[in-house]
Image 1 (tube, rainbow, N blue to C red):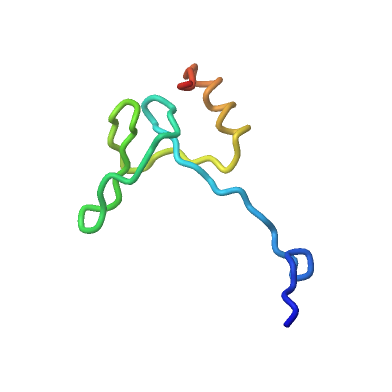
Image 2: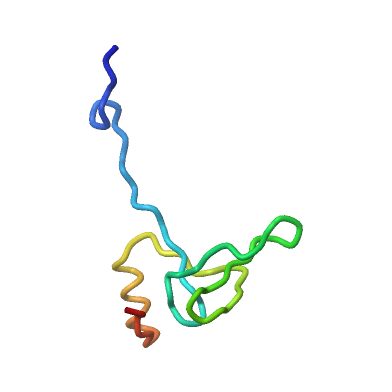
Length: 75
């Protein structure tokens, strides 16, 4: 059996997006709760609980956001 590689079937590899805290700009945002109350996220750096975190598709847009907002990324 011959398996086709990605080039043969035309698949495009997409980098997954990532969530960002609206309060401090950290990327350490994780699901906090969900189900009946709706999805919530919590920042592991500042403990902010948010309904809609910011989401970026690439690092360049994220870095531009940090620069524009004056956030200093955690190291």
